[in-house]
Image (cartoon, rainbow, N blue to C red):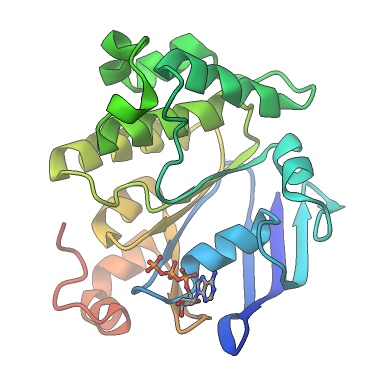
Length: 237
Ligand code: ATP
């Protein structure tokens, strides 16, 4: 479904992403793990057409490398950015409705009721303005908006960032359900949460993928993973 080859991103003298290859099939979910500054966000932004890059991006058999970001989103390759980007002056309902404008002629298999089933906490907040939402509620709205756009593949950047452990677990549970219906690429620093959603992972360090492994292999290789991620315990929440 998604095939990325030789992806390369430079910001001036910073070589942020170096010849990264990724492939995600239908029914698949890939976690991209790695420490701060490893190039994970830049990888997602390049795939979505949001930063200039080298290499090729093919989506559903079509070369989308040079398409503008809106065209890529209209094809159903939908990016949920880090930081959520909820419209502050619009209500939850209006924020979700805006997602539907990315459908580009496709019908989303997710409607407003599906979004509320996945995120029951949004039920009582339909008329609340974006600026008055907590970080966790914003994350739910951002994911809900992406679902309303009829994603054929979702790129999700650090969904647990800044959330309490409880909210991070509930967003993770929703993503695990979403993954049964839509292929995903999930960028995370929280290895444990990422592997609850995705059966395999690619670990990035300094712009390169240094390790690819299944969830089970990573279970057996905690120490190795921790050394790549520069953490004492890579599985800690
Ligand atoms: P984090 O988890 O901290 O978001 P990351 O793995 O997503 O990190 P990126 O945000 O992709 O990493 O950053 C990769 C490198 O590129 C870093 O050295 C970062 O400082 C640099 N970088 C990212 N965005 C820009 C930019 N707009 N201009 C210049 N340098 C940038």
